[in-house]
Length: 158
Image 1: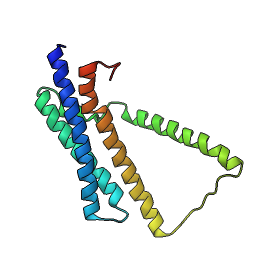
Image 2 (image 1 turned 135 degrees about the horizontal axis):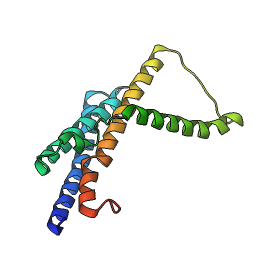
Image 3 (image 1 turned 90 degrees about the horizontal axis):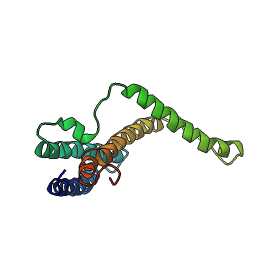
Image 4 (image 1 turned 180 degrees about the horizontal axis):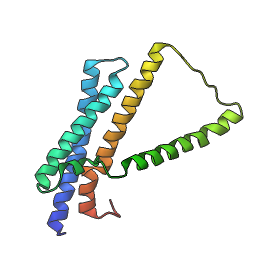
């Protein structure tokens, strides 16, 4: 890549980073304007995911007209995604168990369960918020901005 191409890629990276900050602020304000209750966090994260995906796809269309815009978000479906997801979930839960088990064994962990309908609803709300938030972070840090930073500085520096 020439110096001008690298500089252009750096400029698009900076624009993508600014878009993330603007989308984050807009999403937060939109969610606050709609509700202050249990749905505020999942709405904020879903709005953020939507704005990031749309913004990064538009940027990708402008900078790379021949490439797939779906790859710009970093959220493409790969052939073995199910196996990768299962492995990641197993490793994640294994890490949680490894951290929590010692506290449970020495008696420093208190577990309380609630069985009212609102608590079951909150599990669903929290899972939606966690999923949308995770996808938004993946789009922000492994999607378009990271791809432009890799072009600008190389993979090791990025």
